[in-house]
Length: 369
Picture (cartoon, rainbow, N blue to C red):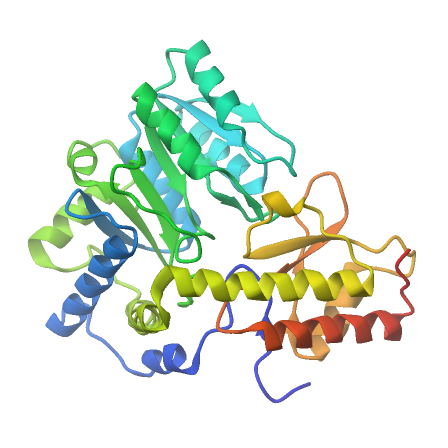
């Protein structure tokens, strides 16, 4: 085994920088003024990155990104609403599950796992069902690396007066998102994704007026965004024990993000990584699952080899022993695996991963046909 940590080719947790890891070497008091100021600075920068202005506020939440998705839906969507969910993958399906658990009426608009959500079809669905009040969508469906057309969908929701909640878990920080005048009412992401922090904190960027109108709505104590927001406004503190080290790491990661040049620079580096990955894997004989027009520069799904000698477990172990961690496929119809191209790494590390995959294929006797 290599002495260094393996490079994580996953959509989170990610390979983080030394500066981000070192930020977690200090302890913070949860009621300490310095930590409260740290939280406030993180929230302020997250709103600024999204161009939220004074209209949007950031509510951080302990837990994974899914905690934040459920908190946003449970707090911001009234129980008597009717929600349209374009579904082209596992994380869209998770939103549908959350809505059903909360007892909120849901209209599923299915698309193929390789097909971006069609804005025209969404417009038709809204036109044909006047009872729909909200759209909840995933911008980047991580199960395949599929990019959905957020701007076009947001424009339709705005023109039809429908609320729009966006799961931007794997896109925020990598792809351009501007909340101002967008038609988006809330955007959800997390610390351990394209901002290159560590896992443990989700956050919701919500319209202030919408959040302030949601008092008493959440069926959950821990996932009540309104209560979290009001308590933080009143005390500058988290309601319950905060993930202090995660917040400190995110502060360091945001400093690096802004120093790198913000979203344009981060997105350009990821795009270079993605191109190096696809070119290198094609040279080995692998075929990407998605058409290039639908591929986001975050994670790439590849068809598994047809050779009977192939198993993902064997490939994973061989590549892991070389110092790289792959990700299993999450499609429902085909055998695939995924390779992420985000985190504190560049095209050099990506090419090293491709070389490790090629070595693993030869060692395992796997051929690509």
